[in-house]
Image (cartoon, rainbow, N blue to C red; front, side, top):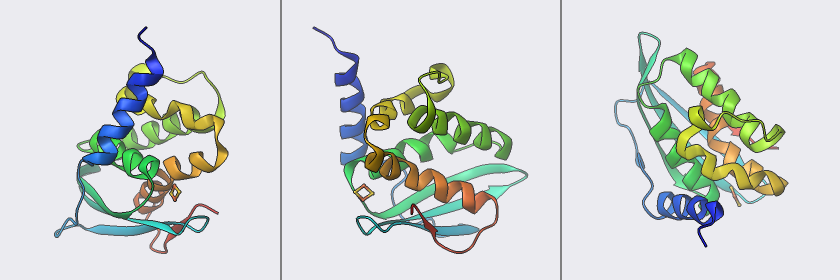
Length: 148
Ligand code: FES
């Protein structure tokens, strides 16, 4: 029988195996590192913004399947978004993985594949690493972001 969890699993496996927007953005105007001290995983986020919009976004580094899939899905979802839309998506994602089941699936699209991490607190950190890094980068922070 079709199980929605299998679909979620497939999206995560696909984005981990073939991460989108992976690699350095040479003409980035903002670069910020995110670090999970629990496991030592690190990612670097590259952003190109102008006129209040994320024109391009990419990441590199090494991490577990969940952190790589989350960064891949996030960068796909954020490309072309206004800073206001990016903030709204950050809040929606936070609801998805950390707070309740009352999330906006239509707004989140493929990101809902990460809904299952809510049951595993350590995995919430994996999935959130890139998001907190992006949030801090958009706020102008220039010191590395840690999940702890
Ligand atoms: Fe390191 Fe997931 S185990 S970020």
